[in-house]
Image (cartoon, helix red, strand yellow):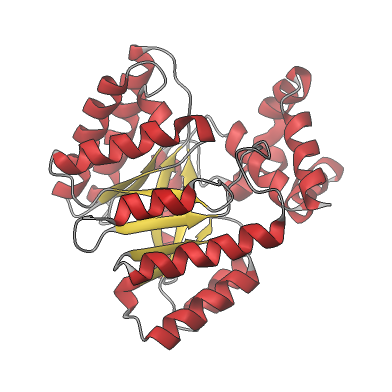
Length: 308
């Protein structure tokens, strides 16, 4: 049922008139619940408050699928400005970057050049970058880009695996073989609408694969960033951590800004390292649509805004 709901929401979100109307009114109707600000300056008060509440941050400057060099350079400039703004504010500049923001779709060398500059810039001030994983067409390019970053000296760079993709177990083995000491890996269920030939469609199968990926990554010595709001997955991951007596620097529980704040607080209170994925930027529509598609409760936020 949730799969049907998700496909329906993403399908409706892609209809031209719906998208145009939502872009005009969505910020007022509920996008601000899931996006911290339309600029890093707007978002800084919220970011400081989250840190004071015991959460760490990974900031995502929204935008994807640029098709021109000038657009990629502009996006890289925005990310660089965010790194500098976070460092000035005394907040560790941990950034999530979509490779298609930097030109991966049309010039992998340009994407590598821009991503390397950003990764080195972040690491120079105590931060790092995580290459976000987009739909299945860009998995190979993203993994190749991570390798280029690490070979260039940005050894704290990391990426994401999506549990629903059939290829992810093999990708995990390749990623963590001879990886730098202390390598991180973020694991998510996957939020894009993918075909059955590419991705698992059954929720129970996705959850089983998710846990298997986490456990295998820990066995291979990685720091695993458990990125989910699934209570069962969080309990199972926490139980593995306790049973294996893993140190706090071997895992994080990562959640989305604006989603299930009471769960976030409970995990902090229970002593877990919690990091929030915090989107920022004016190009928020695609991200907002995927959040609405994840849970009917998220769509209720918009409905309340419409009804007042």
